[in-house]
Figure 1: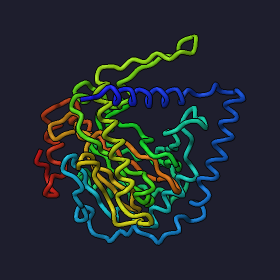
Figure 2 (figure 1 turned 60 degrees about the horizontal axis):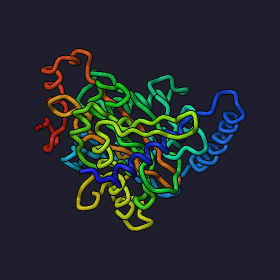
Figure 3 (figure 1 turned 30 degrees about the vertical axis):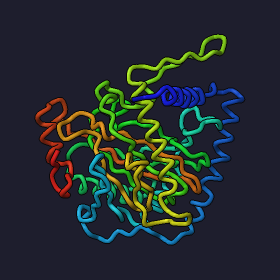
Figure 4 (figure 1 turned 60 degrees about the vertical axis):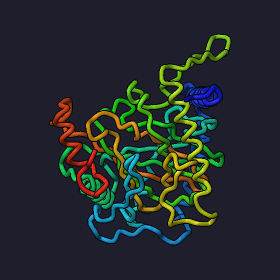
Amino acid sequence: MATQDMVMSFLDQQVRSKLQVRPPEDGTAEAEAAEAEWAARWKTWMHPWRCGAPAASPTASCDGRPVRERLLLLSESPLVWAIPGFCSHEECARLIQLGARGLQPPPGWSPEWRGRQVAKTTVAGGASKEEEERLLATLRERVHSLLGSPGEGSLGLQLSFNAPEEEAGLTIGLHTDLNNGAESRWATVLLYLNTVPPHEGGATVFPAASAELSALGVTSTSDAVSFAVEEDGEVSVECLEGGGAAAVLTAAAQAAAASALTAAPRGSRQGVLSSHGPSGVGLCVHPSEGCAILFYSQSGGGGVDPLSWHGGAAAAGLGKWTVQCFATLPESVRGDEARTRAFLSAHRIGRDGDGDVT
């Protein structure tokens, strides 16, 4: 049950975030200043990576075993698998170098954006070098092998950099990967390209189930609130249907992210893949170089999995690099409930490491 304090805190966070993302008008001095500030910050953020950071010894190794033989069950509810050594140290470094050259700021970026210091690029092909094309092809092949779906459905790759943030908390809002109209996505493989020690944050947070939001068709907590800026500058705020559930989910995620900061002693850079929030509620997965996690946006029976809500905690230190791999349903099963259920049942990896049991 949402308390008034939870709802007010949630509304405050959402409104501040949305007000901050009002982009400066193109061609104005404000827009030019924001572009110059981004370039300066980007140069600072990228300097250690172009110099071969991090200085710590490599933690990722790809031991040659089939990816399904390296599966580790992190959680049954939500169903989240880890695959340590999904990519080697060298592959992670090459992907980071690819991103350091090609990432762009979010549209309308401004220096005041908190929680929006994320640069992304879609790496669907067209890499500038032949060896980069081979690397991306190898990554896709590895993901398809993990999913057991070679040649079935499309696979979108998105390379992202989360800039360092000293203030703790969520910087990637809670959502399911069916958001932004991506209704055909059924699984996500999230690859961490660098290690972020638990005390520096950066965890991927799965707070809890939200059947209410899923039933309402809400795929992002930001959709549970609306606001408008009046002519006199006053801000009017409305909590939409599902706002209470979104507030509860956000509070759980914030608590889990805060708890994750103490998951390991300071200075620990490896060995901790995940932790749970207060009272065992919520799962936090800590970025470890070369490790991938697999989770499902759709349940075994089709439709959004209410346990798949997740977000990203702020990462301090050098920031966080990831590759998101979004798997979509084959065209041949979309819109057909029976075929969709059969496909999901055949391809979701269950507790025994094989076919799903849900």
